[in-house]
Amino acid sequence: MTKPFYCQLEQFLEEGLTVAVATIVQVKGSTPREVGAKMIIHPYGKHVGTVGGGCGEAEVIRAGLDVIADGQPRLVRVDLTEPISMQSMGVCGGVLDVLIERWGPEETKAQNNAMWAEV
Amino acid sequence: MRAIAAALAASAERREAVALVSVIQATGEFSPALGRHLVVWLDERTLLGDLQLGDLQPRLLEEARAALRERRHARLDYRTEAGAITLFVEVQPQPYHLIIAGAGHVAAPLAVMASLCDFTVTVLDDRPQYANRERFPTADRVIAGPFREELRKLRGDRPTFDPNTCIVLVTRGHQYDVELLLEVLDDPVAYIGMIGSRRRVRAVYELLERERGIPRHKFDRVHAPIGLDIGAQTPAEIAVAILAEIIAVLRKQSPERR
Image 1 (cartoon, rainbow over the protein chains, first blue to last red):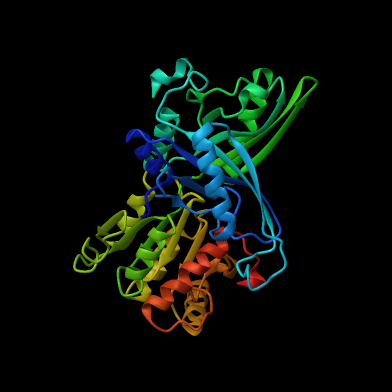
Image 2: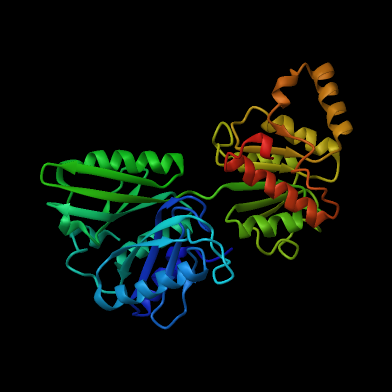
C-alpha cells in the first residue's frame, strides 16, 4: 500500500533531482531499525523512509546532504550507546553502520555500460 | 543511476525478487568499484550495472542469488592479494501472498493492515455483497465465487501453493473453513490459520480423523484458534492478533514468545 521505495526514488530522479540514499548495512546491539532499512535524503527536506529517527537519523541526514554535494559515498557509524539521560531519551544502546550514496538522474560514465540499452 | 532505480522500481511493481549489490568499502585494485552497483535477479537474465569484479563475479552472483532465495540481506567480503572489497546485497524479496477466505468483519481490517505490512492480499468469499472493492479498497484482488473452486483457481497450474503463501480461513461457516483446510492441508504454505474456539477446533479434528481417516499430526501446523492470544475482542483486534501471528511465523519468532 505504501509506495515501493524504488518507485519513489525513480520518481525523484525523473524529476531531475539528485538525492542521497542511506541504507543500514550493519547493526550491533539494540537498534531502532534493521539491516536493509532505507531512507532517501531529499535536498529540500522531503525525506522518505527512516533509518530509525531521532538524533541518529539527523546525523545521517546531515551526512546525506554532504553526499549530495560532493558525490562521495560515505559509511557513517551512528552510535546510540550513550548512557540514558534526560538529554537523550531516545537512545537504544546499539551501533549502526549506514552506507550513504548519491543517486542522480545522470547516466554517469562510472555506472554506464552496454547493458543500459536493455532497460 | 536512473536505469538502476527504474529496474528496481519495475521489479517492485511486478512483485518479483531482486537484489541490489552496493559497495560498502573497497581498497587496492577494487577502489574504482566504490559507488558502483549491480542488479541481480533470481533468473539468468542480463545483469544491470557492473562492479568490475572480474573473476570474483560468478562467486558474487551465486552468493547474491542464495541471499535472494533465503530472503535475507547479506554482507560479503572478498580479499585478494591486490585489495579487498566489502559488498552489501540488499534483497527486495517477493512480497508474501495473503489469501483471506471469508470477507466478513475480521477480514476487512485484516486486509487493510496486511496491505500496510506489504503483503499481496487476495480476499475470497461466495457472497458478492461482501467480497467487493468497496469493502476492500486496499486489497490486490477481491474474488466473489464458490470457495473451493476459486481457491483452486488461485493455485493455478502449480501443483501446490508455494511457501510464499499465507492462508487465513475466516469464512462465515465452519463447514467452509474445513472444506478449504482440507484443500490446502498438504500444500507447503508458510502459514495456515483457521478461526474457531478451541473446543470447536478440537471437535473438527476428531471428526476428520474418525470420518475421513486424516491423521491428527497433519493438523499440527494449522494455527487454530487463529491469532496470538492477546485478549482480542473486537473484529479489528482479532485482525491484529492474526496478523501478529503471521508476522511471528514468517519472522521465525520462537514459539515460546508467541
